[in-house]
Length: 139
Image (tube, rainbow, N blue to C red; front, side):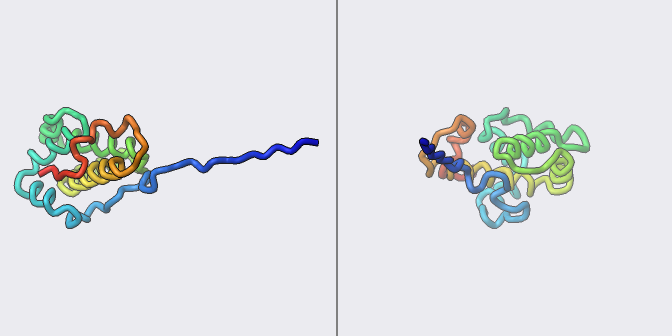
């Protein structure tokens, strides 16, 4: 009778995957971006969108209607990219009621994920658009 040994390797998973790395109101964790957004929010949102690999003019569409489409799209994109739970209703709520805070959270998330990617040795195609953020402020 032969015996077989079955070894199951644990899946390596990003410890931050599945949740936002900072809360919505944790602006104090990146004072440079907070001041930048306070002084000129439209330019800040365009820089964040560009750093995420989307068209930098996309946030200019947010002034069209009562629901900001670019904010909604960027938040949903970041959630999907990093497997963060949420839904369109919560994205819409944050985009309408907490517009600057939502953009600041997206910016912090992109920078933290880019920094954690830079420190890890694994490569992934989903981080390629974030190379410009590694170790840098958006300011």
